Image 1 (cartoon, rainbow, N blue to C red):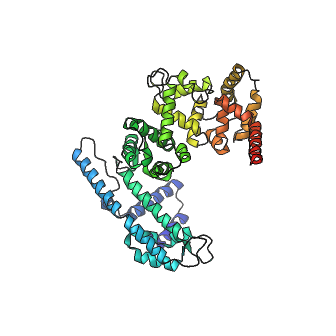
Image 2: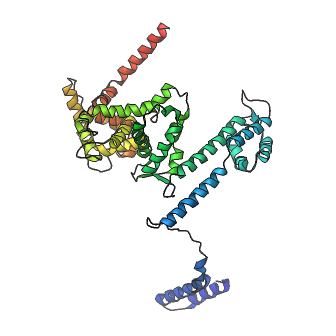
Length: 448
């Protein structure tokens, strides 16, 4: 619309004494006319220039299209794999970096300047080009007075990137749908085929493989699929530390302490499965509420266990191994948001999205009853309730939400107080326990 036309239209409206309805109608007509002209009139040929952005996935009965899709994805992933640096190329990169180091060394670390960094980039080949950028150099630049970066840090950065891409390609091979996520069965196949490449799992009996795979897969899905959709993004798998823990089992000299703290190690998997078998007194492969009540120190309250069997998937009132794994992961990782979400759902009986004084009293009453059974002096709920609200400091002074628990960093303590007599006793006697630890440490120092 040109400026003359706009001005003349305004003058026309200003000098016109027509009704507001008539002016509005003409204004709408003019707008429609000029807008239509601007969009190219009524000609819909313009819309044909919009690129295609949706491609329908083949249906189950379209076998040929599915095969074509699988083959094309396989070729694509092979091409991506060839674009990665192999061992020989990584070794060559290290030699080039070492050859172009710029003195003096920082401690025992060889350093490289930006000019030398660019020279290495020119000689390293096309595959390395993506690593030799100003952005990467700036990321690794810290407090060197000469403006250099550590050669080792840069090389580790490259190694990490290559490993991530290799792992992503490896996981993508199991992505049957080709949508960037893995279903439970996909991840099970990946881990099952990974077992022979992990020296730390050499001692596992093949008959235990299915239980090991189930144990490993549950950790991924418990923490990375909070909405229980049955699938996990490959991107989320790469971003978390679980895959690092799993692939740590490639180390033949992994310490005993590291194995015990690693959920994916053989000792850890055997421990969890052994506990399950020990709890299963009638040897039917399932756990009743009575059998589960002996879990850990055997001090979980009956009311809490009732809620477990009300909310979790059971078969004729009994829990299978997969459901048990979720239970164990929640109770062993109470500081983690996913574990708190699991326990919070059990505590939130009325599904209100928050815990009020009634809910706290309902669960703590079971703790008080257990204390009486064990001959311990009962504790006032009012005192405990006040302490819980002081610890959490919720936004609403009368309600505690899941987010309040997470934000407070006291969620593990609060849940332990409400569901486990041993957890409550530990909290109540925390000062005595700390004093005893200090005395023990002092005695050890005196002995030395």
